[in-house]
Structures are given as structure tokens and as C-alpha cells.
Length: 283
Image 1 (cartoon, one colour):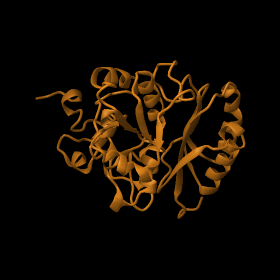
Image 2 (cartoon, helix red, strand yellow; image 1 turned 135 degrees about the vertical axis):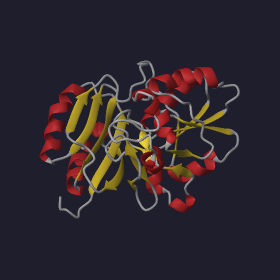
Image 3 (cartoon, helix red, strand yellow; image 1 turned 120 degrees about the vertical axis):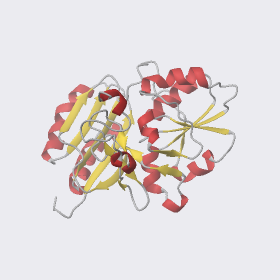
Image 4 (cartoon, helix red, strand yellow; image 1 turned 90 degrees about the vertical axis):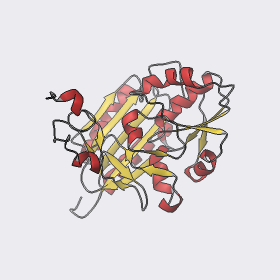
């Protein structure tokens, strides 16, 4: 990769039975290392989930390798560009779940909500009869979300089922539209809601990342930036998906806006406005 060539970040997942998931780790790790890629890939009995970064040729080579497995032939990918490598190293991990809900009976391979293409999303969430729910956690929602979206104020995805049980009613919330970063949490969230008797559950195909990639800024109903789980911290849409303006508090892990970084309560590595009262002794 040359100094002027951007780093490509590719995010992907697929729920598909992978009984031999443990056997896939070493060949996949070796292929990624050969291509000098960095990032994280999770393998589990229920499928694959990953975000990798490197040159355009390297990304293409690894995606071709993955798609050579017939079970992953239709693997969908979200791409963005960044100036610097956003990962420190490469990890290929074996997990019980590719996204942790803690409810093994919820299986998107058996039932899942209705996928909505990014081009059709604006119309759906503009319908006043549709309840729009941001499936992400509180720090992610804090820096950006869609118009009309409800914030469940969860601190982990494991809390989402309890939010549904406490705050939503299938007899009242007839149409529900879910969205998350790349789409993976919505797969399980929609599967869970269907199991609870909700009949019309929609979710944004490819998540916010695909929406930002596909929808021009003048048509976008997204407001703010989108949190991502790497050193970029956040991305924005417009002309492709590119780096946002947020930084990460190294003390508490909360994303920081420019205003947060200019606050007197911000001290690099020690505190920010979101953790100042908790982490530093008060006079």
C-alpha cells in the first residue's frame, strides 16, 4: 500500500450454520496475515462477523477467499476509506456467538425481520405509525441517530430483550423499524421481537454504514456521526463513508465531540465531561 493509497475498511457478517467454525480459524488467519490485513474476525457456530482493514487488493483477496466457501458466497460487505490503519493487530477469534445476546434460542437462521433497503428506509421511518428504535447502546446513540428514533438507553445488547418486555407491546406497536451500525444486532433483535409476538418488524439492511454509503447527504435522515468500534471512533456519510470528528476518552471509553475535547473537564487519558465526576477526586 502506497503512502497516497487510502486504507479500505470492510465490515461484514453472515448468520449461517458453521459446524466446522473452529477448523476455519487457522486457514483464515494465515490468509489475512499473508495479505497484511488488520482487524477482528469472529467465527461461531451461528456464522461470521468481522471488520478488516488494508489495501484494496488485500481486502479483495480475503473477501474472495471467504466467498469461495459456498456458505459465504453471498457475503455482504460495507466499505469505507480512512487515512490511517484503524487497527493495531489482526485477531481471528472463536466465539459462542458472533454478536452476544445471551439467548441461544434466538436464531436468525430460523426467523428474522423484514429487510429494508437503504433507498426505502426514509419512507418507512417517516410513517407515523412506525415505531423507530435504535438498537445500539447509549454512547453510540449519543453522537448520532435517525430522525424520530427511540433510544432504549441500554449499556449492552444483552439488555435489549428486557427493554422490549418493559417498554413495547405487540398489541400497540404494530410496526417496528430497527437499525444498528452494520445490521448484525438487528438480526437477533428482530428475531427476538418476532418470538415475542410482534408481527411487523423491519430492519435496515446493512445498517447505518450501508445507509451512509448509499444515500446522498441531501437526502439523508441521519443526524450526527456514526460510532464505529475501531480507532476512527466515528464516521460520516456524504461522498462515501469517511472519518468523523470524534475522539475516544481513554479513561472511560466514551466518544468525544469537539465540544467535549475543548471542555475544561477533558484531560487526555485522565478524564472527560462524561467521567470527570466519577474518576477524578473533587475539591
